[in-house]
Amino acid sequence: MPAERKSVQRIGVLTGGGDCPGLNAVIRVVAKAAILHLNLEVIGIEDGFLGLIRNRMRPLSTGDVSNILTAGGTILGTSNKSNPSHFAVGKDAEGRPVFEDVTPRVIEHIRDRHIDALVCIGGDGTMCGAAGLMQHGIPCIGVPKTIDNDLMHTDITFGFSTAVQTATECLDRIHSTASSHHRVMVVELMGRNAGWLALHAGLASGADVILIPEIPYNIEVVCETCAERSRHGKRFTLIAVSEGARPKGGEQVVNKIVHDSPDPVRLGGVSTVLAEQIAARTHLETRATILGHVQRGGTPVAFDRVLATAFGHKAIQLVATQEWNQMVVRQEGRIGMVPIESVAGAQRIVEVDDPLIAMAHAVGTCMGD
Ligand code: F6P
Image 1: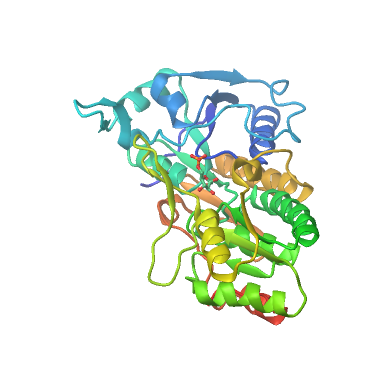
Image 2 (image 1 turned 45 degrees about the vertical axis):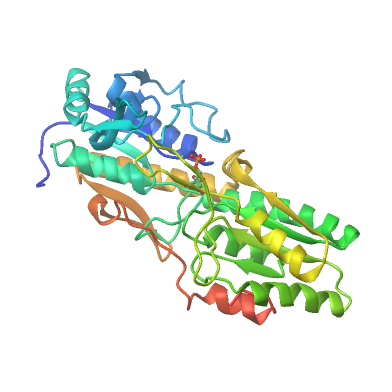
């Protein structure tokens, strides 16, 4: 869509998808820079696209975004079930969700509120939602977030570094109890279909085994690694496993299906399956821990605060120059932008020739293959 050059007076800002540390840092810089430097009004949209669907939004002042830089979560709330073009409006007779395209309702609310453009902070699902609105002439700017670090065309998303730090601290704690009790400890990390989080936290904590979705594991190899360590007097093994990891020729473990979500599969439980298999085959005492949503919470680390602020600042520069329908990215250390459409619905996974895999092998870490 060619950029329409009309004056922008009011922008909306929303946070969509799963939350992560750093969202408030983006909201803060977007609102402050828009109000103080561009003289714009800023409307905070509640709960991602749900706020546009239900017409729930409120003006944001600089006071509203003061003192939120270090706070985890998002002051606006979020939702990962509210893509306007595929929104669950009710249930059929069998209890299955009925989806509708509610974009016209969203457009009406945007027009009624005199919102000229949107800053959409989110992951691939949020970029899909933004791409849909762009097709109806709503100018959007995307800001990439996710602890999974799996957005295309950006080397890093904010939230990821904090999640790596949190997961590493958890792995360190489990390391010490593993050592005391001479156990195999299987620790499950989030990440969906990308192994970035398990790979980084696994490397940082010196995990003995790291299992990621991109490298299907051989259970014999995993068990032999535990047994071999035990034979050589290493009386414990620390395993970091991505929730999306799967055995060679096998399937991922699904925790639940969220029927009214556009992306309904929630992974989870592979650590429990692995722990049972390892215990049965090696007779080593084994425990599983699922880190879960603890990885998404808490105050952002300094790196994420700065990255989120850099992304939000770039977003507001794009608003100023009316370079619409772009998502802010970081590529080779520089902040840039790519068309939102090139990101929507795609995932950036770990390549098997990623230097991190070679590093893991170099320190003797088993990658399950
Ligand atoms: O995308 C972020 C993420 O935390 C994934 O790592 C995880 O699979 C998923 O969201 C969990 O979603 P929910 O919050 O709906 O359980």
